[in-house]
Length: 385
Ligand SMILES: Cc1cc2nc3c(=O)[nH]c(=O)nc-3n(C[C@H](O)[C@H](O)[C@H](O)COP(=O)(O)OP(=O)(O)OC[C@H]3O[C@@H](n4cnc5c(N)ncnc54)[C@H](O)[C@@H]3O)c2cc1C
Image 1 (spheres, rainbow, N blue to C red):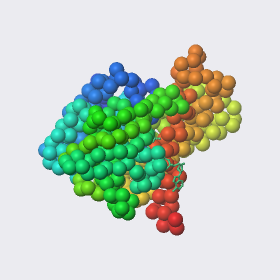
Image 2 (tube, rainbow, N blue to C red):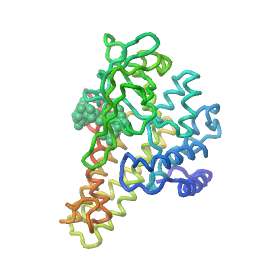
Image 3 (cartoon, helix red, strand yellow):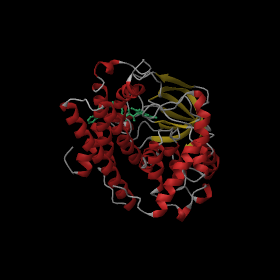
Image 4 (tube, helix red, strand yellow):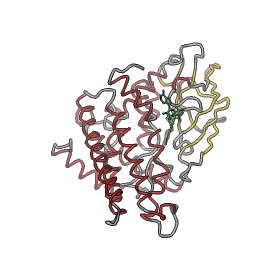
């Protein structure tokens, strides 16, 4: 199923594909949102800037900040996400997909004039400083404190799982400014210069062997009052509104699964037993259901008819199908499955070994699946809590 039947979107896709081939920073050897090697970061910045410059990113921004106004077709964002995934190259890194809408909808003119051009030319990489050791699914219970001291806020606390924190120039930070208010009402959003004294970014080494996210310790960090995004104590609304803007994610996962399915078939290489063939067949069904669901949800989003279950169901189907595929990818290698990436003769360069270890991350990031199932049950099906 394809939703972009319009001729101009097919032309858009063709041009974009050529553009990515010309400007991309090369092939990404691992699945997921991974930290690039330091020497690759300049090429990813250039690619990001080129995508903005050509209007493939930021086309939905206000025209005075480089958007295309009425000429923009909102289906394009899904095509861009798909083509970047299909090219197996680096997506633009950083949390600007969250920060830009927050600045556009809630920021001051000065903040927009300062930050948006720096996002467009990829001078600033943003990170998302939301989660804490005791506040992930229940984000509103975050404890990082911000106290007003003259013309600065002083921040103390700890964040965790900060993707690309080690590369970031600016952090989109949530901190508690009113500890006496109900928990959703005492939170404020800030733009934090990551080079401020007292910001200590410590990479976490993951089971994959890479360090894709970090702990960030904040010790008496001073943020000027003009770096509050929106109103003080309105951060919960701002964060939720910017999370709702990031919709193109429903497009990239399923195209990756379709491509992976082909690799899995090659791995089975004709001599897989009946049980493995049966699993492969079932997985093929799940991959195509996920893809069809993703296209249907994109279409609901474009028509404004999406409900509370749409994006969560795509994410649950994608991450669980992906996990099952990586398990089969390891099992199909028999004893070779215990080889690690980098070992001699490991199948498909060890891609499945890494993908298997990473697969749990997809079931957690962007909302843990159990929590999303609650959302589907309570908000879409109207079941009791
Ligand atoms: C790859 C990756 C990248 C990330 N990047 C960032 C980032 O850049 N910035 C950032 O701020 N955060 C980031 N996160 C954090 C992410 O948002 C949290 O991991 C997520 O919200 C879950 O929170 P938690 O890890 O604290 O787990 P918890 O909320 O403690 O959950 C632990 C377990 O309990 C279950 N659970 C919790 N509540 C319920 C419930 N009500 N009902 C049923 N089960 C429940 C969960 O499903 C899970 O299995 C990232 C996470 C991952 C995996």
